[in-house]
Length: 282
Image (cartoon, rainbow, N blue to C red; front, side, top):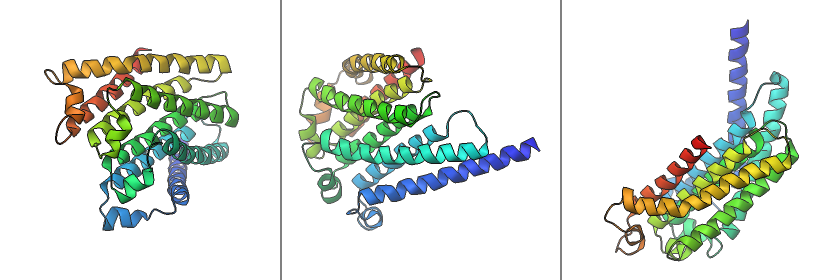
């Protein structure tokens, strides 16, 4: 019966997603053997770690969604393809986190900031990096017409663009982002996280089209990212004038005795909201 077949297929796909999610959890622990997850979450109540950990799970979920999306090729072929691309997505996600820690947050030890100092600002950015990478992997492996090679190349391109975004954001902001984050400034961390996720969403959008040629795909991604990068300073200015009228965003983030995390959250929303609107209009 068609309905019964549909239900059985749905249950199979759901079970496979749960298995991939568990594998992603175990592989993440293998990449971070020094971290005792239960101890940090339950015994130490480490909020910084909880934020980064949940960010990883969101990124993992997005990456698995990329492996599941697309037309069916039959139950057996679907299981093989989802398993293969799901494992690839998990490995790429964990590699990305290591790379981003060494390059994007290169000025300090992420492990020390999150585990030893319980720096929530660093935890927010670490979580955002995972979410952004999950979006990139979602775009890299979900389009039709490519394969493992195109997925890996698109992941590399996406990671490079994410790193470039971090440098550009640091350049246009009128203060030292890394210095503020190292001072446990959650407000600055939220703004930075929003910028990273917004650009990653644009990269995801550019990569999700079906693959016809390298030139066409990379051109689409390049145009989307350039629009997003040009939009970052405009969004920051609009946040000052519209979402925080009569206030200076920079003053709210760094020139108060206690940085205004709410202002950082508004800045993050402005970036992500702008990114969503851009993808709807392109």
